Image (spheres, rainbow, N blue to C red):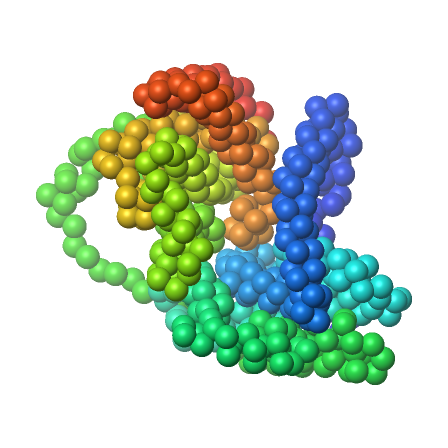
Length: 560
């Protein structure tokens, strides 16, 4: 056990690098200023989310309290947080267990498999607190203060929140360990990771839709049955995941009953974690070593093949763009996390479309959006929607970070920094265009837009996406995260993604303010579109010029 604890401590030091961060930001005025700006960006972005989310939680709590079921807010929060951990934890678990750089060092050491896997599991669980706590804290505080709960409620809440990520992470870990045991080809392992990741996202959205549906034609009976029991709403929300009910009742109930549910939740988590360690001690190293096996392919290459493959030379910008695509496609963590934003949004809209026939409010909204009297406002709203979701990816803001310790290759290759950043910019723009291409057909069908409006929205979206991607690249170029132990860290533990999100909001906000002013002065539609395109073009030219002018010096300053 002492070796297990030492390994956990070592993994925490390696992953969090508190000493390195202290050394970096405690010396130099510029470094301290960077820290202040990062803290401000986190406070602004995170604070905005928590504020909106807290208002939503309060409304759910107030509605539930009127029905005599205020605990519904807690159950919803627990189920949502654990679904998020389960889906996205699969990628993080796979990266930490099988793709981290230190795994090849740990395996030959006199360590048991459960010690290696268990220590990495603890590190992943600590990182998941960054996801779980913002989701759980607002409803826990709202419920506790709103119901006047006492001291033991807060103690139970803290314990349950600390334990909450363990259940979904154990389930994800067991799934990954078993899959890797039987998929022994590295190429297949990457494919399974990608397919499993996207299926997990689709499954999460699908379950959320299916479980929230009310039986058609039996709405009155459904609500009467739900309200017949004090815990009816809570049971309806949490029946697909019983631990959500245990956590809710553990906090909400007083006395022995509340303590009993709390202990039940903790004990199930502990037992499942022990089961994971037991199974990992048997098959973890086998699955890990199976993934290292490789088969040699014998293929004769003749002179014609050689000429066909290597006689044509691509431009440096195009070659860098291809290199970026290959890096994304061969790394599951990069592919799923980088492209999930442009996949999830269309899925949500499609699900809303399927719900139109059974949702009167949705039908009213669609009818309103098709009103010709507000055609311009609807088109501008679609423009903002497309631009936002096409920019919700971390491709540009982690472009340099993803290279990690191999960035020295970029510094030595006979391609200028300007051409390299242009190649990276082209790659990130292609990803954004994929998001637009996926989203626009859905919106065309939903809002019955004509071809001319679609073309205008697409052109302005492409132009406006340039400053978003260029500034995101600039951020990552000036402060890349090159030191990481597994690919997931380059994305999930990179503050540059949050800063890029703020840039996305800023560009959309500028265009929104201009649109509102033009509509107030009753400018014609063609003038609104023309001015938005001109402003977007000016921002695009300025941001690209800034990016190229900073490329040479930034490359020199990046230290390996």
